[in-house]
Length: 167
Image (cartoon, rainbow, N blue to C red):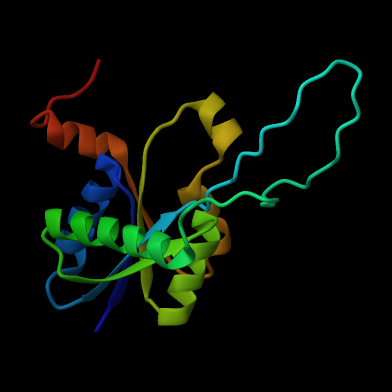
C-alpha cells in the first residue's frame, strides 16, 4: 500500500495538490497530511538614538520575549490546518503538525513515516519573490531524498475558473 505525504498549507494550490494526489493514488493509498507553521521570530524593540552602540543579538533568538505560544499549541494549530485542507480535498488522512523551516519539517516527517511520495503544491511567485523567499517545492525536490510530486498552481487556477485559460 502506498503511503502519500500531503504537504499542505492554506493556499488554493495546496488544496488542489491534495485533490490531484487523491485522483492519482486513489482510495487504496494511505495519506498523511502535514502542515508546517514557521517558528515565530520574536520582535524585540530597540532603543533608537543616533551614534549609539547596540548589542548584537543573533537572528532567531528570544531574549526576554515571550511569544505567548508553546510548541504544542503551534503544532496543534498546524495539525488543524492539515486536517481542514485534507477534508476539503476529500482525502481521509492522518494529520501531523510541525513548526520550523517548512522544507526541513516536511523532509523529517517523510523520513520518520517512511512515505513513498511527497505531494506539494506550487504557485508561481515570480522571480523576485522566489529570489527573496525561496521555494519550498524546489528545495524539497533537491533535499527530500524521496520522490516529490509538484502540482503547479496554474492547474488550480484553471479549475477555479471553470477550465478557462488566462490571457
